[in-house]
Amino acid sequence: MPKDLRTFIAEVAEKRPQDIMMVAENIDPRFGMTAVAAALERRAQFPALFFRRSRGSELPVVMNLCATYERLALALGTTVQEMVPTYAERQAHPIPPTIVETGPVKELIWTGADADLRRLPIPTHNALDGGPYLTGASLVARDPTTGALNIGLYRHQIFGPQEIGVWFMQGHHGLYIQQAYEERGEPMPVAIIVGHHPAAIMGTISRIPGIGGEYEEAGALLQEPIELVKCETSDLLVPARAEIVIEGVIEPGAYKQEGPFAEWPGYYTEQGPKPYIKVTAITLRHDAIFYDVFAGHREHCVLGSLPRMGSIYRRVKQVVPGLKAVNVPAHVRMHCYISFKKRNEAEAKKAAFAALLTEPENLKLIILVDDDIDVYNEPEVMWALGTRFRADKGLQVIHDWSGPGGLNPAGWDYFPDGTKQPRMMPVVIMDATKPAPPNWFPPRAQVPEEQIAAVDLDRLLRPFDQRAALGQAAGAR
Ligand SMILES: Cc1cc2nc3c(=O)[nH]c(=O)nc-3n(C[C@H](O)[C@H](O)[C@H](O)COP(=O)(O)O)c2cc1C
Image (cartoon, rainbow, N blue to C red; front, side):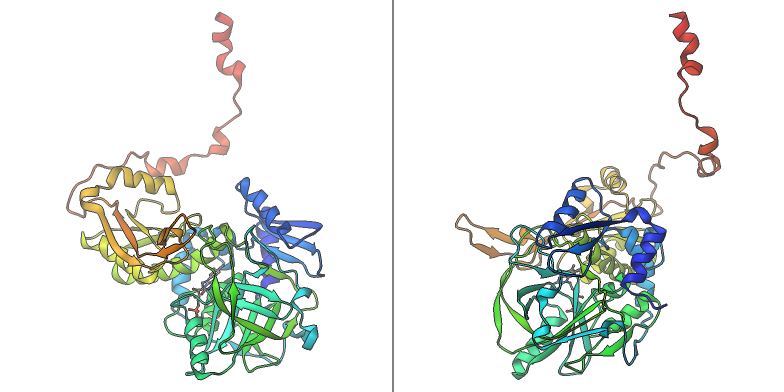
């Protein structure tokens, strides 16, 4: 059975049943669904949420499916400890897609006035959002120069029953393609994929050099070719096993005010005139599941983090072969912790710069640690900083590294009249590694590893028996 959104939901339910919850009541997509996710977030809980019914639509909604590393690791069929090298390794071996005649995404075909976005349960996420948004939707477009298919996951604001705003960020291939059509004065056919296996979705978020290659990347991450079908109203190709595909066209010169929208750093930081799509068709499964990302919250960061970590791992490994692990923490995607077995003093800077060049816009703090530190255990990273870092030697501040502006509010100067000015952002590198060999450094306090491994806690430990433990002493009193 080829992998898709529902095979993954079934896998989560089977292998991590505590990780997915169902809401049977009829919930309003306007703040109702995100309110449930936010209430759970206050308890530091991030299960996937399956809303069986939503006001105004027949279709169920899944939200928060990609809100934990454990579930993303499951999507790659591996563990959290192994997911980053696995991602990097698969990136190196793309698997081309196959083209099929038809597929489940063609079960229903809505065209003309029937292609009405109000028939879909599209959530409004945060209090100041400009309206409902597609937050887990990847847009397919063809580079008019080379003919290559390019895909990226972009925020899409619903402007009306058949109009969708889209924001292509500076530097992303989506923007190059849209500008190329604009310069030619030609309409840009697009297709928006809503709902597929998280490995396929991550393939559309990966940093791939050059325009295109996302379907090959998705295949590599899925470990099987992704099946594609032709669109109804253009020659674009879309996944046959997607839940929903929205087809449309961006007319040259057509812009509308987009935003505000709560972005991944947890703020409303970008709005303005953006291109928009005129919907020409919607194709879907008869029982389509609407896939949504809880924007501005944990899921938004986690889903973006693993593809970034995979690419960083790949690049750093090329210059520092002793690389052990990379973590871009889920709760603060501007930080990057890198552990490696240091052979010489130059390696720390090489690792830091390779990471920064892979992810030049979003990182603002790199912490380098030795290979005995677990980068997924933040207190341990802080301990390394406390005991191995020396600011006079290990601290580098690189001024004017990224920007100006961006989604992080730290990239802006704000003024009392509500205006703002973009500014360049510095980056901080903290080298918390021990001196390279042959220098000596005190050993770490540790119980012999083989002794710990030999302990059978279940056999040894009993509930505390007060009488047995304190009975005599208590009697003597
Ligand atoms: C949840 C989520 C939302 C995103 N939203 C946007 C967005 O609105 N605009 C954008 O340009 N990139 C966005 N990205 C990042 C792109 O999907 C990613 O960088 C992708 O590789 C861009 O592809 P491209 O370079 O082919 O355009 C988002 C990523 C995630 C995980």
